[in-house]
Picture (cartoon, helix red, strand yellow):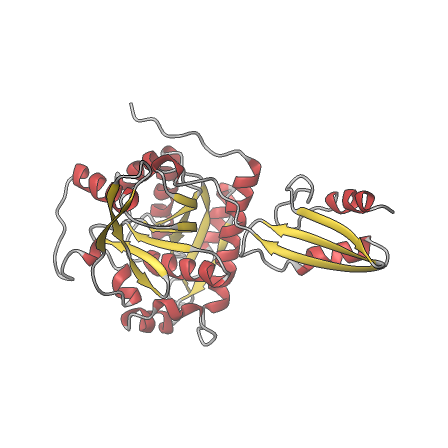
Length: 348
C-alpha cells in the first residue's frame, strides 16, 4: 500500500480517550515509508494523555510489516486568555460549594501534576478572603513590578509573579499578613482579580489553574467575563451535605457559562465515606475525575508547606493526582476539539 493508503487506514482508527477518529481529531501528523519500515507520527492533544501505547498497539496491528510509532505532545487550547491579551491556552477553575473540602490542595496538586507531564502551568489563588495557596506551597516574598515594552512599543508596568519550582503564582496572600482579614465589596474584588490577570506577566502557558473561593460568589462572574474558561473542576467530600453544596457550585458554573469538566471526591475513606461524588456525577451526566484518600500525609505536607511534593514518588496520593490530572486534561481536550464551547456570558 502507498503511504496515503496507510494514512487513510490509520486516520480511521478511533482514539480510545476522545471516542473520535484520529483523522477527525487531526492527530496523524505524518506517515512515511523508509527502507522497508513505516514511521508514523501521532500528535497527542495534551501532554497528560494517558497510555498512548494503546494507539501504538492498534497501529502496529493494522499495518503489515515493521512499524515505528512516534508521539509528539501538544496542548490544544481554546485561547482562554485571548480576550485580555494573555498567551494562555486553557484556564481551568477549581471550585467547591463549601469550604473545608480540600479544594486548594486539589488545585495545587492538579497544577503540579500537569506540570510534571511537561505542560507549562501557572497557578492563581482567587480565594481573596482565604488565600491558602502560598502557605500550602511554602511560597514567600512579594510580586515585583517591572517595565517592559507593550504591544504598541511603549513601556508598560507588568507584575512579575512569584515562582514556585518554576511555576508562576499570584495570590492575595503575598500582599497581606497571614492573620489579616480582607473585608471588600464586589468592585474591589473585581478590580484585584482583573489586575492579577491582565497586569501579570504570566508568559506563555498551556494551563492556568485558578483556585476559586468556596461558595457561589461573584468572582465566577468576573472570571467568566474576562476569560474564555476551558472548564471547572468541582471538589467535594463524599457525605451528603457536601454534595448538596457541590450541586450549588455546579449550578453556578452553568449559569455563568463555564463548562463543568467533572467532579473530584476528596478525603475518601472511613471518616466521610466513599462514592458520593461518583454517584452524583453519574446522576448529573458529568465526568467523575477521581478520588483522593483521606491520608494523613496530605495534611502533614500541607502544614509543612510541601503540597507540591504530593506528586513525588513517595506520596500516597501520587497516582491518584496524576490520574485526575490526565482526566481533566482529556476533558479539556474533548471540549477544545469538539468546538462546542459555551457562549460568552452577557451581563444585562
